Image (cartoon, rainbow, N blue to C red; front, side):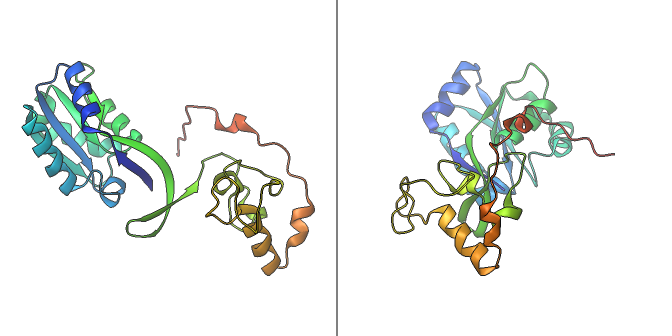
Amino acid sequence: MIVTEKKPINEIIENLERANAKSVHLFGCDTCAQQCKTGGEVELKEMTTLLTDKGFEVTGTSLVDETCYTQLAKREFRQKEELKGADAVLVLACGAGVKCVADSAEETQPILPALNSMFLTSVERVGKFYEGCSLCGNCVLADTGGICPHTDCPKSLLNGPCGGVDNGKCEVYTENDCAWVRIYDRLKEQGRLDIMTEFVPPKDHSVQGKPHKVLLR
């Protein structure tokens, strides 16, 4: 799941004005953004009110299960004339959702983001999210007890803790337990501490070459 946060309304207004948009269609996401309370039905209504009060015409709203699924976005454009006719589309979804809506629209129609995409999360429960993966392209969780040093350590250290650990706490975020102390404790419980004697080479960042593409046949 992708965690998003709302952009300041002044930034949204500025982007609409730069696009010379008088009429706007709102496009939300009923999965990630809905759980983050940034792009579900409630937020679409709130944004409608905000933009209307600022003098914009909101032509309608779209709320699909997954805005990052291009076929769902394309279906909305086929079925809703008011979506195609709006001066601009404001997308209350992650960056991938914005891209899918943009790829589904006519090239002449501005597609604008209403949210900032923050991180890929692990969900503890509704409304409680923790960064779960940095999408590094070379997963080391088999060697670290399922705790990611690339993500959970602010310095992304791959061969043990830094010298700033204090009573098991991180020196950068002092309220957090050191990721490598947690890794050590978990591997000890599993009887696999021998793994920590193995040297891990520098991360191969070439596997993060962008843009990625996967074509499943």
